[in-house]
Length: 279
Ligand code: PXL
Image (cartoon, rainbow, N blue to C red):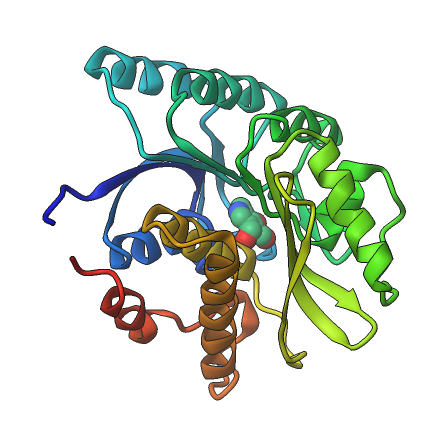
């Protein structure tokens, strides 16, 4: 049956160079058939792994931006939040989530990687994100963000199955309905692991360890996941699709000598997201 495109309010930054945040979210979700309405939290000349960047925080601009949307009476099929530039933005997002009752809420607590907060990220953000996660249908932290949210020490030591289940249960205890932890080290390798509160069963989507680390792959994963869930796929299939597409982009990028800071070479692969989506 023909239906209009699903709509996603995507709350993330606009980094001009480096393929992360909105420059990944927009093409990916569009290729999956959704209309993306961006809520830019900050404008950066390039993401924060580059040095010498120009940054403009948009916290003061967001209330007027969203008030206009309120005046339009917009209802979204999904609200997807990633990079938030200040503690005050968490309150702004929290209000939007409360208003968009019927929307799928995907919250990616973008705060850091490799055991450290991203440059410029405020120290209060982990506590703020922890309370925001209570409103999520799905949260998608990496291992650094899991440590920041849970207060546990950051560790990439391989987890037993029981330890991995505990990681996911800790996230569900923050209030989310489902949790996906990306690049979780298990005894037999890396996996994106997930659990729904509904059944408490852990699912594991294993993937090969690749010898390259590109910024923006967490944003890519969460975008494909959101697009798949919006198309009606279950969590297991959505995690599988997001894992496969992200690995495909990383493997393709590794064939080129482009520095990793420029992100994964995803554009030529976007048609693969479309193929399954056209109705
Ligand atoms: O990909 C996560 C991300 C998002 N936004 C900004 C970043 C990063 C990672 O470095 O710097 C601004």
